[in-house]
Image (spheres, rainbow, N blue to C red):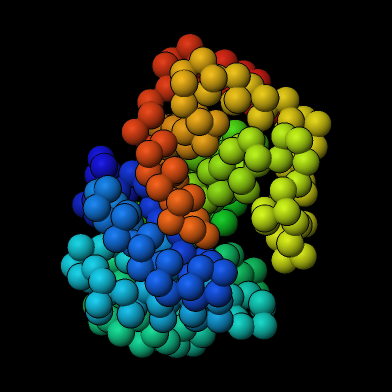
Length: 312
């Protein structure tokens, strides 16, 4: 798997990142072990987690796997902080540094490769929040820092603040939802990231699963949309407008003799500014389909056609 620099930093990561949001809950530890092994064998290095995932279970499982399945030094570990257990946003220096220490304890490691602000907290002055990122890097607890789900102006302000004085930890990544069904990031976030030299980590690149085509004839009983927990998460992408985009993806896939998943994933992966899409799978079979699809590169004419049909 190709390795890419994260923005204009020296950190190299695989061009596909493994998401672990379901680990320890929907995905049991033995299944997670199989996924991580397959991912690394395919050349993957970037593994994304967060302190809030599964009330910390995702990090605990990942830590156990680094002790017994895949060595720590073969992975680029990215985690996130700024959301409390009760769902409240808190990017205060006090909470962030405590949360980082708790993440390190759960994974039983002394540092993460990438520590990200999970959300923007309007109740905390940005300079206080960013000082926590500086402290994390200066103390060795994090090698690089980034942000997630910030608007264009929030990203630009944070990146500019960090560049304004020597010795501050630069913002190197921005996590954002990005797919053929959700291109809002192109309006502000992607231009801001390009200007600041920040790499994009695209979450939900398969349009919350809809771009795989599995919802074309209804909601499968074993799908996320059929569960109380995720029904509202998927529902916005089951509109007529989305259906037209999905049908275009399916048509392209049939013409290329690949899966709709491969078409949708390749489109995001090779967009300007994107370092890596982040993909999560509940099962090894799902992950293997993603890893097989990762090899696909879209012809320019198909990419252009998908750009046009999804430009809404």
